[in-house]
Structure formats: structure tokens, C-alpha cells
Image 1: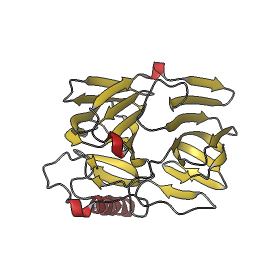
Image 2: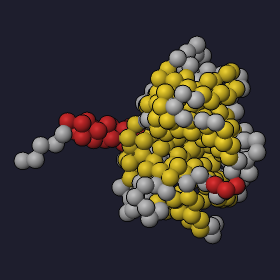
Image 3: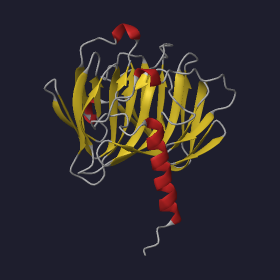
Image 4: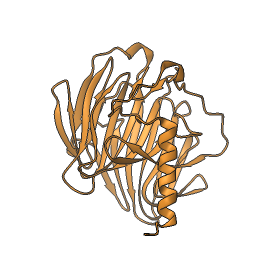
Length: 291
């Protein structure tokens, strides 16, 4: 009998546990299982006031068709980060992917780290975006789409669900793909910064969001000022950094305190900084819908 490595067993247990927490159908609704009942809705819980940054690590989670994503939230103990509902770090190759499924009540926003992603929806959009580009799918009152990886073996990206405020839940669905050439890119000594959403970026969301991708050489520092009224997140794509007294490795992050955030690269590193203005409205996540 073949002996299974202990690490693999533990990894599978984590994946199964996280899948059971979120329901067998996952968030994308790519299967035909019964939707989560309304009585089981999950509402946003405000995070308590903090004097130190909160650290987290992504959790392997089964999604779509044969895909494993590294879920930052929602996971046990970390439900949402108003206005953000879901954040996944995915790395998938064919034939795995996310076939046709419905959405409603939020904006699904994908940023590609490497490889490519193919978006196709019932609005008539058929779009492939490569590394450094974005896909914005505003589901509004309801729409369907599929998201499938490119032909390469490495197709990695971050998908963020941004809640729509109550007044915009019934807007018409829409899509926009933005190639990497259109996003502002600034290179300085030891640092490369791409503005994904925010001042200078052509990407427009229905919520005020700041989102940037930063690559640092070892020994370099990136500084950003985080508004007092926003919720923030720092997530490490690769490397090792130190921020607000916390050391972070790949697929780890913190919810940093507002104000000045200094991020020091202990070795060559890449990370994203995300900040959003909260709607301060309940977040009801029901599988692929946010009501």
C-alpha cells in the first residue's frame, strides 16, 4: 500500500474542512446543488477596534470544477471586510476552472498575476486578459458568466468580490476588461508599482477602492498612507516582508492599522495593498449571491 505523506493528508483535511464550512456548492455556484437557504444567510460583522494589525493566512478551498483556491476570506474567524465580501488567490490550469454560473448583488473583480483568464458571459462579452490586466464583472440585478484558465500551466490571479450598496443592488449588469498596458506602472530604484484601482487607473468600480500591486527588491521599502475611515488589507504574493512589526511569508497578510504603512522587503517580494470605503450595510452572502 502506498504511504501518503503526512503533509498531503493534513492539506486535504484543511481543504475538506473549509469546503464544509462554505457549503458543498462553494461560492461560485458551478454545480446544481440546492442554494443556501435564506435563513442561513451570513451578515457582515464589524471588526472590533484594534491597536495591533491582525495577521492571517489563506486557506486552501475547493471551488468550481476541480479547482483549489487559496481563500483569504470568508473563512472561520474572518467573514468579510466591508465593503469586500470574498478574496481568493487562485492558481488553476485546464481542465479545471469555473464554468457557467450565476451572480447577483456585487462586483467580481479579477487581477491576473501570471498567465491568462477567459471571461464569457450572457451579456455577449468574450474576453481574455493576461498578466497585469483586470476583469470587472458587475453582476447587479443578476447575470451569468464563466471564468476559465488560459492554456498555460500557470494561471494565477486574485479575485475580489466588492459588495454593491443597497441602492445599487438592482443596477444593470456589465463587464469591462482592462489590459495591463492601460494600468499605470511606475518603476523606481528597487521598486515597481502598478495602480490597479484608484487615482490614475482607468478601472472604475461602484465603490471607492484603492488597490495596488508592488514588487520590491530585497532591502527596499514601500510606504502608503491608509485613510482612517477605510478598511485595509496587505497580502503577500511572494517573498518575505515586515510591516507594522509583523513578518509575512507567501500567502500571508495583515489587516494593517490606518495611517502610515511601511512595508520592508526582507527578500525579493511582491504584494498587494487594498483599501476600501465601507458601506456599513449588512452583507448577506448566499453562495454566488450577495443580497
